Image: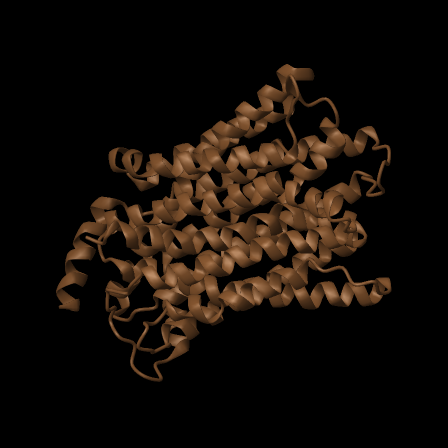
Amino acid sequence: MAALSEKIGYGLGDMSSSMFWKIFSYYLPFFYSNVFGLSLEHAALLLLVTKLWDAVSDPVMGIVADRTRSRRGRYRPYLLWFAVPFAAAGVLTFTTPAWSEGAKLVWAYATYIAMMTVYTVVNVPYGAMLGVVTDDSRERTVFSSYRMFFAYGGSFVALALFEPLCRFFRDNMGQTEPAAWRSTILVLGTLCALLFIACYALTRERVKPAANAPGGSVLRDVKALLTNGPWWILLGAAIAALLFNSIRGGTAAYYFKDFIGTDNALGGSWRLTAGLFLAAGEAANMAGTVLAVPVSRRLGKKATYLWAMIGSALLSAAFCYAPHGTAGAWYLLGLQIVISALAGMTFPLLWSMYADVADYSERKHGRSSTGLIFSSSSMAQKFGGAFGSALILWLLAAYGYDTQEGAFQTPEALTGLRMLMSWIPAAACMLAALAVACYPLTERRMEPIARELERRRR
């Protein structure tokens, strides 16, 4: 059994990547349209194209990682090699040059593609590490829970600090709005780099999967992946789940600015802002990851994921019926906490199920493609995030949302904001639940697979 320090160290890796991921998912659409100065249509196409490119690059990185050989391991060295480039790319993405609109658009494409490429180079190997830190399916769920607990912790830190840091650099340091956003990312990016280095230092690769022959056929690995039924099921579930998260999170800044406005009093001087709403969700996500292990041991991974997604869908739909005033602010905050706790239970289970899928593939084909399989989870994340972010902006444009500061939003635009926080993400949740209902690799089925692989690896 791995030491507590290693589980914490593994969690620090996703703490780092999640800090940037949540800022990208929740604030980047708003940044491009309201700070950087792109039109909604240009910003939507930018987010879609760059993330789709990034999603396609994930399997390529998985193949590269599977074939990496170094004294530091197969996947772990990438955390060390790309920690600083990860932070630097983030700062460049949130830099607003004083150029013409066309030149700024080129800059936005170049910097965001670079950011997402570095993100892939770090996070695909990091995800694949779950398959080699332990060969025990239940302990993988524990590792995955630590991962997601620290991921949500990092998201909480990033979201709780983001708006206060922007205000500090703008109001106390006299920076312009674009410069304040860049300085905020510089602070958070430095922390991200340090966390990746700590993850590298505290973890080890213990499991030696069935070795792929030097120069082994990439096409054979890809064919094995494409004929892996459980992989397709998890791919669909992950895309739908990320659509759910990215749509709700990415709409929040618009929703609280133009739909809630000043009708957000919680009592006294407390106000429900987008930052507080999102940070509370991340704290609840952390609580959900703590519950994932005991609940899944009682119900099984599949059943726990299924019921958590159904619950998230029903409560998301209830967002549409929030009352006004203080009661409405508490209603929204309460729903956010419960929805986020349920969603927090699902992601550790999803990563653990990907590790089971990798074992299933190794038993069936006699070859290890752990990096390629885990890259699909990152690919799903990118597809879900890409379509989610683009869908937000396309729908806002279709509903007539006005990005000008102080603009009056039409009733149609406000209806669009309400739907983007309720029924649309609820539909994505139900798609994820339907996909997982078909997932075949239960704990009972994985037990003989684990025993056989243990014999092979001796």
